[in-house]
Length: 285
Ligand code: URA
Image (cartoon, rainbow, N blue to C red; front, side, top):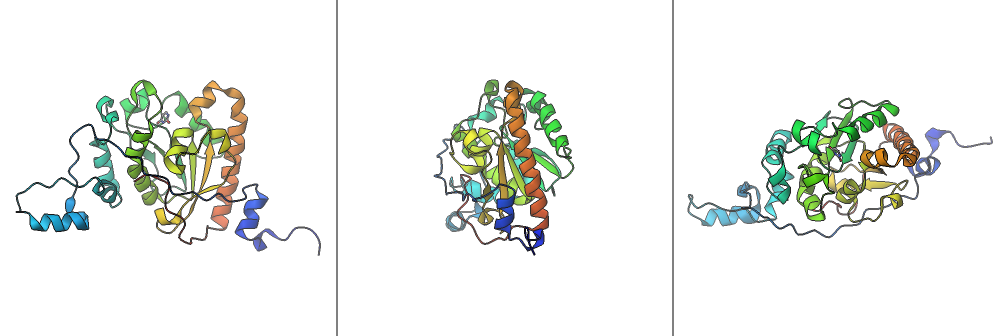
């Protein structure tokens, strides 16, 4: 018999090669970015941290206990959706909280296969409490429609930071790091089949400090299984819709990225990723 082997006989690696997504890039552990708090540190449920529990046991019951800085990501990593929403709404872990009308956690189907991650809320998102409702959001909706997706139906949309940066500037590294535990928890709760990163801030939040966006497009990344209940999640990087509104020629490249994402999703559904425990997670705690 001649020709290519039937698709069902190809391995996952061979299939990735077939759709131009090979070799697979492994995420490296990223250095933790120190976040300075500008306001009183949040009081977290100290009982949830072993060291804090011991310390708590030594104190008289009425003594207030400020949670150690390391307690925050640990506490967030245990939250369900309601707690997460409440925590994000009252978060003061970075200076962005000072300018927000409201924090914007995300929107969509909590059992979605697709997770799209943008940069941070703009003025309209800050006012409405929903990501991507301004002009960039209209383009994102059109991008979704182009691959037969609709906001809220099998799609969840989140941002690297949950509070609006002043004058819609790009979030700083420390702000992305402060919000990273929330994004990480959203990913773990959602367990999407595929993550699409829209722009540099999202790439920075999920992949670490990884250079220009153009160098990331077309490269296959995976969110490690150790960060998501033993399931590795393919990650596709593309341009942010706001950038595409200013740079029309790059829309064609974004379309290529979406087509690649769609092909990858089809493959994920047909051949779910094996899940050996991968390298340490890239999101700063
Ligand atoms: N840009 C983003 O990155 N996110 C939004 O929610 C809105 C605009």
